[in-house]
Length: 101
Length: 144
View 1 (cartoon, rainbow over the protein chains, first blue to last red):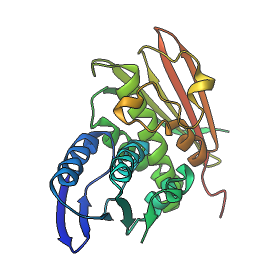
View 2: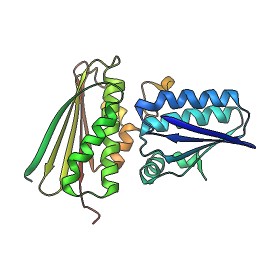
View 3: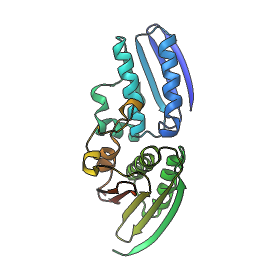
View 4: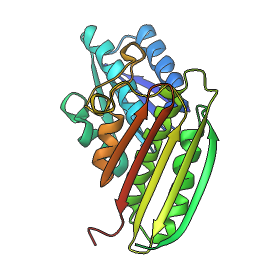
């Protein structure tokens, strides 16, 4: 998994590069949690343009970060979901709590 | 229904093999000319079933997973994922959305829900201490 991160005003944008599955889950979790600890921002925006595939392991990773951010009064958003990710979001109900922008 | 092709693979239950499993099954199903959505559905369901075996059936990544794919002449694909791991206490309960035995590890409990939504049928049989078999079926070209 690779990451590209930048912070502009209140938003930290993290572009994920790779599949959001069991193999990469721990690395994504640790990377995002470290950034959540270290930086001051309101919105964490995950750019999924270079995520080809995601399964329910990815749902768990996103839900975990959502809860963490919510408890600190911050928000999690996503953008650029391909058709496969969009279907996983729809079927699981993730769109109800994580906003796509 | 007549079998036109089939494959069996034995995979070590190691993290990362879910990615190989879904790519292999997708490639094998290509002869049925599925749409991109159908291929994505199959990849997603295979990834869920194989991840379950890696994470839940064998806790120390030490076992093996048998993955079987059968293609039929009327564009039906059957996928069977079998492990010889610890088994499910209650397969019906495990299929419910958000069911997980490992909430502290951030497992979403949506694996079976996704398999059910992305495939036409899902059958789960399990024996405690003996293992679990997940059977998935999908008809290709249903929406054509």
